[in-house]
Length: 217
Image (cartoon, rainbow, N blue to C red; front, side, top):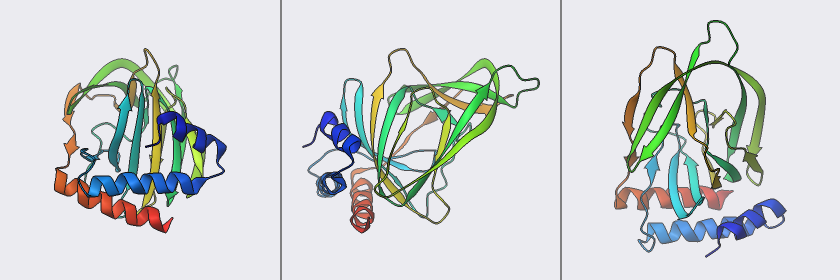
């Protein structure tokens, strides 16, 4: 079993992508065969998350964007920022990150900032008084074999072209005092969203499908 530090080191080096691929394939085989007790989560941003490990402020996940995603949509928007620094390696397909500049000093701003507080299976989307404008600063495209980093607090979207699939291994390290944020409707209100967590059989099926994608590269 590779630790967070092991994976971080290999992603930073970028010299042995086959090691990352083989490790992920091993994890997926364990999930598919019931040797690793985790449950996949269908994320409203369009991908499936397999939460592999959590150790204090560090987390390891496998993220997969299916070619035919289920009709799950965010209640705010796809523009968001993490409370943690993300380091990700693409194992299959292509991921497009749109990095977004936020401006608080604009007249008639179109977006409200929502704080995202998680309590078990429920995410509380808390509407704040902060109103902003969002402007695309950079668009980055990352294909199989590439790695990328997203800093905590940086607004962005991460998407895959319609009809395409992608898989990444993602490392997250929480920043003390930071909060997950999302941009939503100015006239929206605070609300709660329940995560769509899969059962054991569905998780095993997804693990096998993701493994086939990773093996293709």
